[in-house]
Length: 86
Image (cartoon, rainbow, N blue to C red; front, top):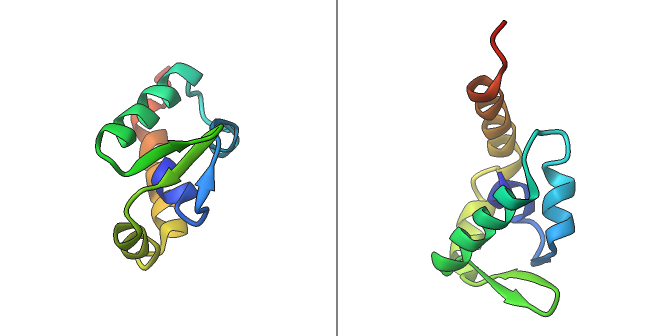
């Protein structure tokens, strides 16, 4: 969700990620873990008080894949996996 939701921004901050995921029940710690995984994969790098995408060609490929639509599908799938059963 982080990738599809923020790939349109060259740089972003933790607050942007939290805003993106605000409607979901996700802990800030889980968000930080996801950002760390993106860093370890060399997809994002820290820059000042935020992050930037490290691989411009990869970013262009993701941008060409309709990231808004992909984000919607990821959110829908997350909802199915995390819905509360009565």
